[in-house]
Amino acid sequence: MKQLKYLMPAGLVSLLVAGCGSVELVNKVSDMQTTRDAFKSALHKEYVALAVAEQKMSDVDDAIFFIKRAREVGLGLDVSPQPMAERKIPKYAKKGIAKARSQLVTKLWNGADELTPKAAAKAQASFDCW
Image (cartoon, one colour):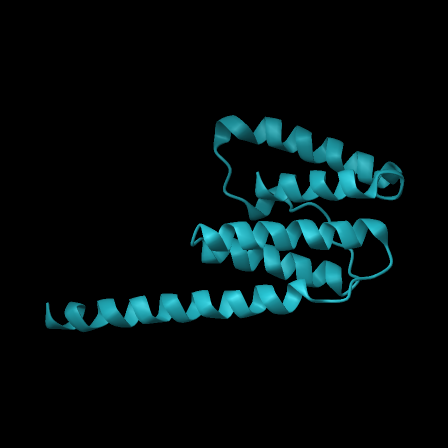
């Protein structure tokens, strides 16, 4: 029992440190100069906004996930909608989410990122947050 008494504060401290690290990471990534690509620039902003929102809800893991995606986009990398295999999705929802991802990817491949960059970025970020 004594060990538990000392481990609980240590766990809390590590959680707080992780939270502070994510705040610094969000600030650093949000200030990145993004590419001239309108879709990637909009996607970067969407992911930063999601990271900030998750951070405000104290969801450090999701804040870090979104800020890492924002960083990748900010570096000019191609970031596709999150693969289904990376998510824990209830069985009853898998079919609908798979269909939505397929439709999103098809629209992105067919030029939505160039024709409507802001809307396409919002759609991708919203899917990843779903």
